[in-house]
Length: 112
Length: 117
Image (tube, rainbow over all chains, first blue to last red; front, side, top):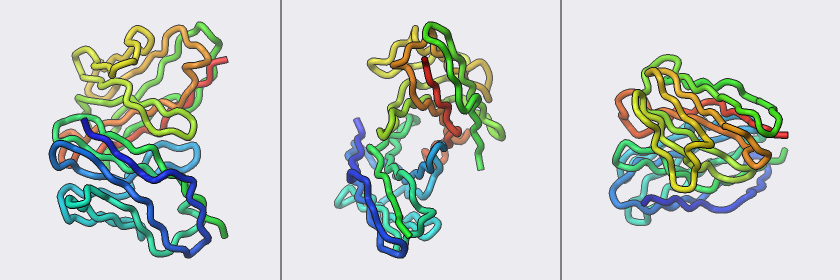
């Protein structure tokens, strides 16, 4: 089955620093890839997605590119803010109509 | 966008009682919903797939008699934790794809935090 591996946290950065959270996946086909964000005490919100190789998802200054050759979907942001502090989950969607498979989550803490 | 709502957001119950959590798709029809469980500082674990009009499909290791799922309509799925015990305390999250499964994206409810005393 599918699996998703993402870097362990927590990641602690100063405001305006550059962010990278690594994510790699294994899949039998070509899944859709997602980044979800979970703010304290809340459910998950979709941050961005990419449905095929070389697609770049972007939202709120975050970006991630679907790299088939390296089976990766790393999340990046050029300048983080305190409000970006949250847990970020990488996920892959099977080609069938099935639930998403999530990585373990990476907690980001941005300090002023 | 598609909106999924859960209720209650928090519930505290005594050991041995049953608790029902509702998951509703507010502006779309969901023939399928997924129930996840999230342990503190851990990822989401898929518990079961809820199918409208038929039995739920449970993941390996999830007790179906413990976690009763009913999907009686196209907009409502319920998870009942029966005879709850402290180890059932967790954050339960439901999700649903859009009605066309256009991109595989799931829309998530706000989550329900269950505390069993």
